[in-house]
Amino acid sequence: MKVLCLGDSLTETYGINPDLGWVELLKKTPKISTVNAGICGDTTSGMLTRCESLLIKHKPTHLIILGGTNDLWFGLKDEFIISNIQAMSRHANHHNVETFIGLPTLSYNLNELNFIQENYSECIRHFRSTLIRFCNLKDKPVIDFSLNMTHKHVLDDGVHPNEEGQRIMMNNVLKVLNK
Image (tube, rainbow, N blue to C red; front, side, top):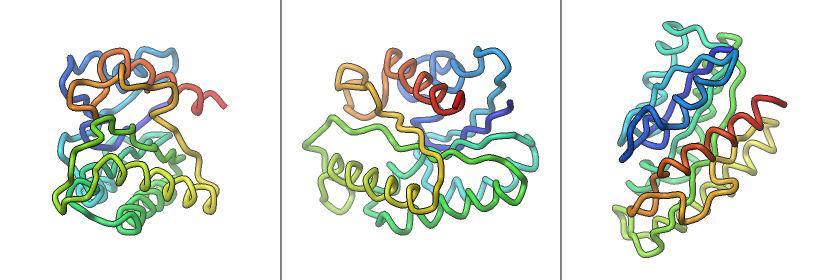
């Protein structure tokens, strides 16, 4: 199984040793190879721009899309973000690659405001709910990266997972890939 992991800082690994990120940990699992195509600060528009060439270059069997938190920080709406995720999923489908949609981790910084002065934590919670509804409607498999995570599993910024959080994220991926 070759897994292309497309995303932002939640995928690239921010604030800790990259070797301890969920993508690298997943790579240590027997019969799974991974490609970390996460870029800190990226949006789903950037991910969509890169998606086709990454699929052609790496020829994965599976694609995990984990994005949207930077879009939300800039005040972009859920529907726009989901349309980009849907487009990436269609690219993967065209290349016979099975796609998994990642639900971003929660923000535990409850007072942070995004670029347009909305509560960032609430924006992420709302987006997660909207994305779940979309995936259920379209029968798309979902990986909930926040499952079993608490505020103890993130860095001081309240958003990015620490080493223990990264292990939890990797286990959440394995639970879905092993089904």
